Amino acid sequence: MKKQQSSNYLLLVLVVLLLSITPACSTSVAPQIPLLFPSSLPPTRTPFAPVPPTPTYLPTPFPTGTSQPTITPLPTNTPLPTVPPPTSPPPDQTITLLFTGVIVPARCVQSAIDSRGQADYIFTEVAEYIQGADLSIGTLNATLSDSQPSVGCIQTYVLVGDSRSAAAMGSVGFDLMSVATNHIKNCSLMNICEQAFFDTLDNLRQNNILPIGAGSNHAEAMLPVVVEVKGVRFGFVSLGMVESLAFAGEDTHGIAILNEDNLRAAIAAARQVSDIVIAMPHWGPEDTPIPNSWQLEYARIAVDAGADLVVGNHTHVVQAIDEINGIPVFYGLGNFVFDQNWARDHQQGVILIVTFQGKNLQGYELIPTHVDFDGTVHIAEEYEAQEIIDRIESASSMLP
Image 1 (tube, helix red, strand yellow):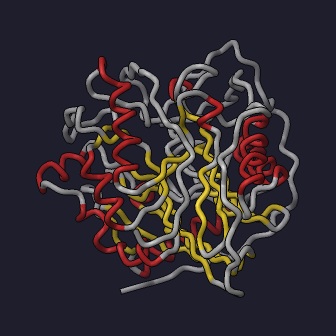
Image 2: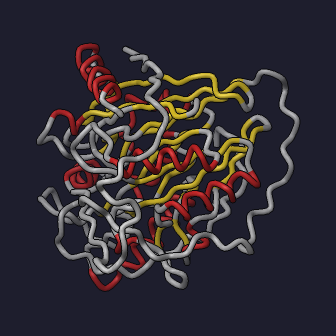
């Protein structure tokens, strides 16, 4: 494997999920749970100070007024990973981290994989970027299980792929994968949903990809994944708020729940064993480049809690970029791999490359992408790349 990594400190297990046919990224939340932030209360945040994105030209609905889950935050007595002290890095070592938008190798993408017998074709044109980063991080919003039959190229909200996608992601150079996502418990055979989730995590690990954001209970789901690169320890936490059926409980497996207490606790835990803390929330409304008030508030909380970088996903279109107290916040990177060709903006995304000099954040670069119906990812042509960057800049200019 091309990067130096520490152990994955998560014990990720699955909750049995009976996924009925509901909207693709629907968010059924128990109505009796109180609101965390009333919709009438505008978030308190610093004025927008944009970091100009630099284009590089190279050869499921979110409900209004989502309620707060009642799960308790990471207990103070929860044992954290035992992380060896960092080695002394040579001075001025450059470290690059790569992030992508949502990866959904399911439905028509999976059908194309079935036809070709492999999934490597998906990443052929972007392999040099993924392999060239010191750490490459994606967001997986589907299950990857050979125990699940393919649903075929049909309209369905059951997003199921197989182990060939995990193998392709591993061979192209992905190192970590956020799995605190709303479709991570999907299955096409209702009686073995638990196995599908276990298979997903196992398939990622077997291909040297560390899952982030799930566990056998909520405390485990919130534990950081820490990876050391050139003497710098990067700690990742991922929490989701989009689908309550995916949530872990005190004694049940699932994903870490995004609310204020949990977000602060997860970042604090990561800070104890990391030099750089990166929060990866799965949040926000689909189909709009404008973050909603929940995203704005949680971004502020993440920065206040000590995150050094915030990279969100779920929205299926690129969203605004912000800077809060000097910390970059990327609200959504769009679709990286998905079959949503019914709208041009849903075939678009950005590869985010963040550069550190040792422990110091130096800057970032956006590389616009376009994904075909079969999942093939391309570097966007110049005219489309500018279109994507213009949409991000426009959305950023509208932030309060």
